[in-house]
Length: 416
Length: 118
Image (cartoon, rainbow over all chains, first blue to last red; front, top):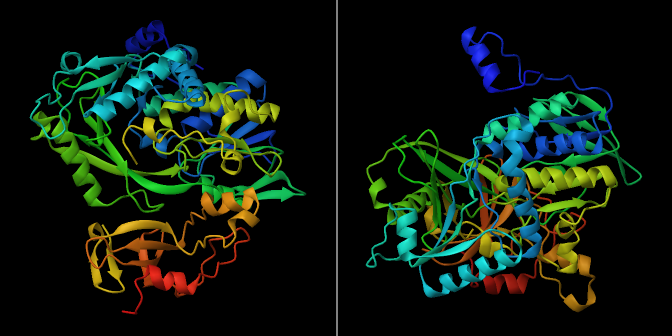
């Protein structure tokens, strides 16, 4: 595999870019593997990479029903932050933040990680108190966070509507300077390339149609490209966790909703950071291509269709224009929906299941992208050792029976 | 966007309706007598079907009454809407631990639906 460097770029520049090889090669499914990961998105590829790199498990495969990184990896708004309230969340999201910081170098791939800062706006006294509490909780957990007053918000992001006469005036904000955005397909391909180099098979267009379970233990899976024998299966799908779970006879605490996002036509750099507002109900950043990337709340109904209803878009646009009146003449270029698996406590599941050898990583709801490296890291540990590590331990399925929930609705980008 | 047929008012735009999630989940009659696992199943576990799914809607901007609908969640096509307390017009598997449909409390359901038929 070519190692990317300034020299390789110069060399290829001089010979007309004829020497670039494939980043990874597609594999035919073998009859048996030591472990199989369902889902070739960010979390799935990260899981495969850490299984191979840190646990020496290289006779493994990723099976993906579509194409690499074509599900929610390609549909999210790529926002990175770790300013969650509770200890369990701080542990996993900040682990991800630390991994993001060095990931481009570790994987020798430009993931376009941009630590441009994330603002969470406060519009009334109660919201201000809650956000200040979150800043203090973050600091106690070693998570970088600070409070900005209205003047500092205006300095940090001059295009926000700061008029005290607006319907929801901005009175302050939390800022996580290490937060930001990165490039979704670069992340997936970086993990896929690194995993492939370590010997992992990446199998696309391979839909799982059933799980083979004997005496309470997983023995393999049925796919659209034949049967694969394996003692370990990890489900890392976004938007279909209940469907895969049902193949193992599991009922899960998950509901699947459409979440819509949109991008504007590209304009010159104008929004220097990520802005989120729970009360006005939208979030917005600007991609390196210049498009404004806009997201908001889920559609209320359950659906697997990857599309939502128009009134949600209308509210989303109204909210963005309330925050940024200067965007009012922009055209929208694209609009899409993804299916998000939402748990009742707005926290994920990284867990063993009643079926031995069958592991679940899902229920990331509306904010799984930021956790990608830590999610894969924790799941790889669980699959390799059959025991959750300290980061994964709070995210069991059992918490819905014991009541030990990790209720993080308050730290979501917007209320869902 | 959907057009939804309220059993009381007829077909209207989706924006007039609120959503109530999975239908036919009956509250356990004796919560103190059941296990934690059964309570968790009632409170948290959902069928979340990809395919034909029975769900609750409320006509918030109209008659404000709750009703049930059968919709294919893989296509968003509505198959039927029906009054609370009635069995789904097509068989669906959801709502309980063993996968068997739960019988609704007809009296409570009638109260919820505001009594009377369309």
